[in-house]
Image 1 (cartoon, rainbow over the protein chains, first blue to last red):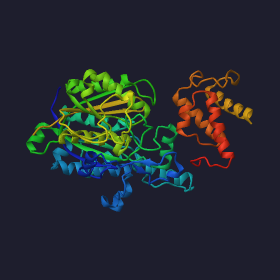
Image 2: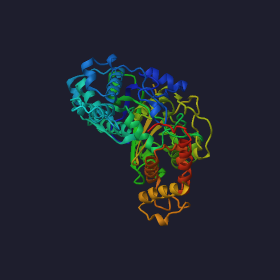
Image 3: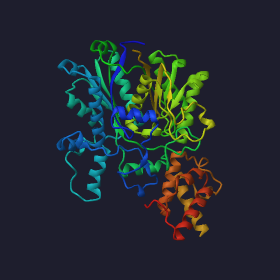
Image 4: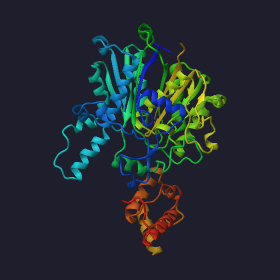
Amino acid sequence: MHGRRVVVTGMGVVSAIGQNLPEFWESLKEGRSGIGPIESVDRTKLRFSNGAEVRSFNPLNYFDEKRSEMLDRFAQFAVVAAREAVADAGITWTPELRERTCVTTGSGIGGERAHDEGFSDLYRENRGRVHPLTVPRVMPNAGASHISMEFGITGPVFTISTACSSSNHSIGNAFWMVRNGLVDLALTGGSESPFTYGYLKSWEGLRVISSTTCRPFSKNRDGMILGEGGGMLVLESLDAARARGVRIYGEIVGFGMSADAFHLTQPSPEGASRAVRAALHDGGVPPEEIGYVNAHGTATVTNDSMEARVIHMVFGEHADRVGVSSTKSLHGHVLGGAGAIEAIATVLALHHGILPPTGNYAEPDPACDIDVIPNVSRAQTVEYALSNSFAFGGLNAVLAFRRWEG
Amino acid sequence: MTDVLTQRVTAIIAKSAKRDEAAISAETTFEQLGLDSLDALGVISALEDEFNVSIPNEEVARIRNVGHAIESLGKLLALTSGGGKTSPER
């Protein structure tokens, strides 16, 4: 390990299982799923019916009309989550701090809804124009930019787009910037809002979406359930957190990355293992210290058996003692926002000493011979945990966290 | 009808795989044609377009060779010509 120790002092989340941190955690603890019939798109036109939407989310509860016009839904999620995280961390902004703060977000597709509506007007309605704000609504960095403007943050601000690994890449880079002293505070996470007819049809074509529900690691799993939402974390140096006397949720200790260089959509256990090992190495964490893994766990036939292999490859004999759950079973696969929501779940698990379950687990699969914490959360104090993201295009990003005592 | 179906399916698969139709039989697997899982999705999509049907995921998972594709389409087309509705609508 090198550089400053970095801790998590605030978190904010909008998801299908809770539109704030306390609600989100309650749902995780209870194993309560937010998966249900898709409401925002005509599901009779789709081969699948279910999704994990953020229901009854009214942007006007958070933004005035003028501001809400500028923000696609994915950016709204990012800003709302950022507000909660900043308030949660009790930050007092000064001009100096604003310059020494970074904002990093992850998003796979940016303002997909604005894109879809604008182009639908053009191609289908034959309107001669799209909304003049379409470009800034659609750009994947919109979340980060609006957060930066809202809080007056003038340090490094950027967005990483690596499909399902976007948020982990974003959080990992923010962690490194705080660790190496480039910034003193990081507001980091990601968001996604994928529920448009065109985009859902695109996923339909890949044939990896479940026609029922998300059953990670279960023998009868039949694919993913898409989700939406956003998550943001506040990271700062341990010294700064102590000086402020702020409550510390946990410590972020490692970040690992790798590429499979294998296949556009099929994952590789060798590639994924490299990222897991890299995270452990970066944090100086011996594998046998890991007690919990928040899995990528999309519930596709391919990912889950691959990920179970990775657990065995990395942990060897210790694999039996690692609890592995996929919270995607509850909040869906939020794509570019997945890593952020799952990092928050992982930190909360360490903080509360309760490991969230893999929901909808029905039938053990010999190819997924791991402890999946089936259906019911487990009270267990764990010292170190990992959160995995393994994206299309073979891009892997893994975060390592440590429980904070006291 | 069966001959025409076989011919049309074979033509589409041959075009996707860039192979000679004469070299393709019912037993020819997608793997033998050099089609990986992503290529296979393209072939299925082209078949859906050609026959104006929607092939369900479970059915697609079973299609490993040309013969399976012909069988699946035969079943779906029998459903539609019998007045049944394939879902979802295109």
